[in-house]
Amino acid sequence: MPKFKNKQNEVIVLNKGKKDERTIWLSRSVAIVAHVWFLVDGIYYVLLGKRGPHGDKPGLINIPCGYLDYNENLKQAMFREVWEETALDLSKYDSKKMLDYTKQPWHVYSEPDENRQNVAMHMAIIIADDKLPKVSIKNCEVGESLEAFWKPYSEALSIPEKDWAFNHDKKMSHFYRKMFHDFNY
Image 1 (spheres, rainbow, N blue to C red):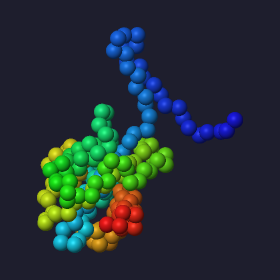
Image 2: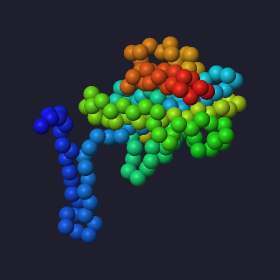
Image 3: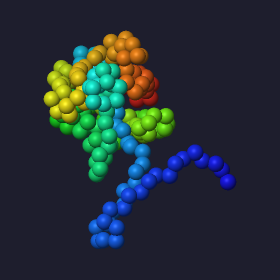
């Protein structure tokens, strides 16, 4: 028999034996990483944030991210997380002006190397527009984020690796390479 290193998920049964009995599995969380890019005057800008004191990796730069909530799909989670962390409403943009990579993740990271045990789904959207929209942290939970901002991709590359949370610098560069090589955009 093969040897596996998994630990079985725990189970909680609510209202056992009743009509509304419900089983909940305590399993790995699904994280959404929302790569949002704007193309303005031939320059690619990436949406970034600075982690607040109440989350993991405080003070570090990140791509907007969070968890898939109950009863939502990946795209809905991406749009919600972007709204919560940056006050940007992605649903208002004309689909003719965007490349939408939200039906399936462009990258999945499932290594259980952190205490959170996340499976990270990297989603992306690229919007061509005349100007960058304003972003803010007004919709954030207190202490979740310190700042939301746009950075030209070429400048984001110069942010030192030590200043990034969750290897988001590498994922940002990976998507940029993939966009031009695989998608030919």
